[in-house]
Length: 226
Length: 298
Image 1 (tube, each protein chain N blue to C red):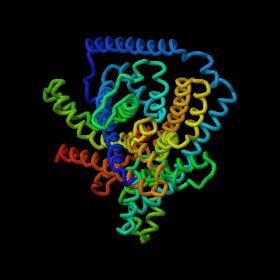
Image 2 (image 1 turned 45 degrees about the vertical axis):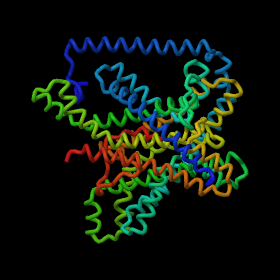
Image 3 (image 1 turned 30 degrees about the vertical axis):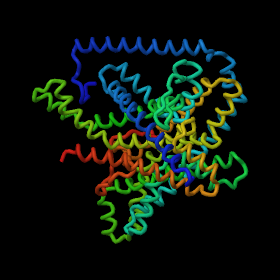
Image 4 (image 1 turned 180 degrees about the vertical axis):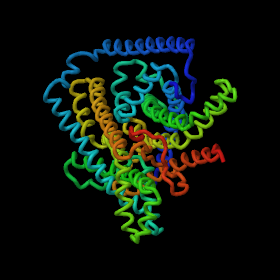
């Protein structure tokens, strides 16, 4: 284990890549979902609600299983055989893509709920007051409602992203050699150092989690109304 | 939508426009569904042979007994352990003595930040490696890992619960001459537990979903049943659909129970929600916010 620090670093590299790629995609998809959910078209809102309810009650492992074993049998494109990118020592292949899709579909539901909590936190009176002073719909949204909604969304969104960071470990079970998978392989190879290996990898995650929460706290403070 | 912050009550023209959007959405969704059904049909996912196991009594029994029952058992044991763990460390974090408070804080933050999979792998290969029977090893690896993780979360819930009891309660108790442990055990704990129960039930959804992470070692409960069925019948898609549906139904039932308990025990107040890992805790006030009871991430 101590002879191969590069493997340790590389494993966490995959973890970070998984986190960043699926994090960005989840926020995008989650925003679309929340727009559908709070929007005025009831069919869209019901469809988004149904999707969120079903997916967030499904274990992440089942979603991973679906994209690794089920979906490729039914949909040609979901084999992801067309993804074959190599950057430095990192290979982004079918396993990585399937992991990103599974993580994104799962996390976007929680992103949607976090953003919705933020929108719900804006009191109705704020919008009414904005309309009363004559702001048009665009003005109400961009100057009164959304800034407050975003600010209130930061803490729950950060919790969601931290959960995503920890959930990238599931990808290790399904073929991506990220930190959890690397730890399992080290645990098999160096039986006498198991506790040390566990602590090393656990601390790696603790550091990443602290970085994400530090960024969140920075934005929360910066956007706080005094 | 009359009471939305985002929109005015729509007038006739807007309502007509929304109807058009609605119809377009329905058509789009039906097209998508039709395409999925067509692909399923093309690849033979609807063949009777692939669904037969889920209609055969022997397999239904295996799914319910070896699958669902074991999964529920793991989740229930984990939550029981987590409640004890959470009580100990939650009270520890509230202690007036820094020498008790800090280690408790450290333990809670550590187990909240570490992925459950890491804990399962570690417990499986190190702590319970002496057990000879594989399914027992998996069982205890999952239960111990989930106890530690959910216990750490419940410690925070517990702390928030005690803090959510109005301050005057403790002050009045001190005023009538109670000692600190009496205030805790007679006044704060009983009320905090009432506030906590819905949060504990919600946490069961998380634990139940997380039992599936046992897949990383040998798998137990529903995941192992799935692992046993699809190689035999080459019916991956139907198996995944059926097993996922079981999880979803059980989780929705648990959410219903949690919502009911919230209404019954707590009333209109918001569900207890704990902050993220590593969050700076400002002041001692309870962090209530509009969460829902559907169970946290993980």
